[in-house]
Image 1 (spheres, rainbow, N blue to C red):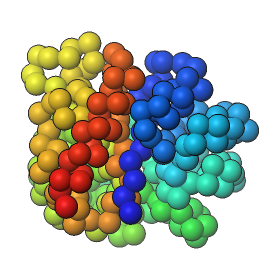
Image 2: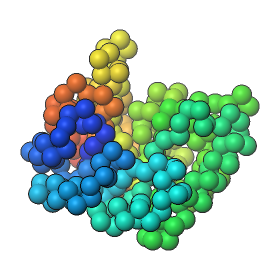
Image 3: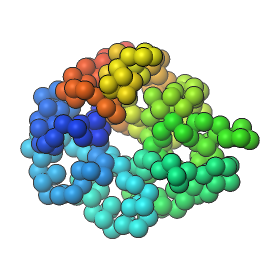
Image 4: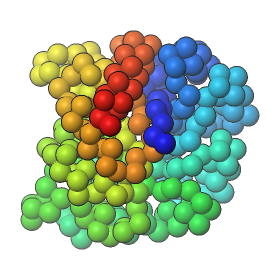
Length: 253
């Protein structure tokens, strides 16, 4: 059964976290996705989740932490009863510049994920836009990553695929068997929502979420995760986006 969730990064500018949990409970969420900024006090985090009837089945962890702090990552995942661990990003200065480099990064991800897969977790990559911008030889980094890591899961951030110049429906068709989670966010019409970095509440932008939801129904996606990189009003974003996503997912059957 596919579940709805909320990436807590969306509310990083609206502390404290406990207020966000209460807001999400009121909006109808039952799941959230964690990221590096929330794992500091695990006891308090677990209590905040429990007090609001929330679970954290998925979490983001940086590549360095995944490689060098395996015990800590596993402690966090076990304490919060996570099901999936995703590597979310690669800093610009560390990004390869050619096909060989991206294949090597895919191999690095494959190796980094081994202890987590052995422990029973889904392990995958969460994309941004840079992975879909062709290299000088015409190859595409995201494809190279997948080729080098056959068992790598994919948390598909659809809006970033589009911003990177990719065709979301084609990527879903080609790699839908890897998709275990999706970031559900929207892109504002050109020139709008400048104060929100050009993003929009789900269903209030230019992304064809109705069509994408239909395509996602053919995949094994387990989590549809609402995200907005810079909302001016997190409560507005959370409520409107969940309402839209639930309606479109139901209609896509």
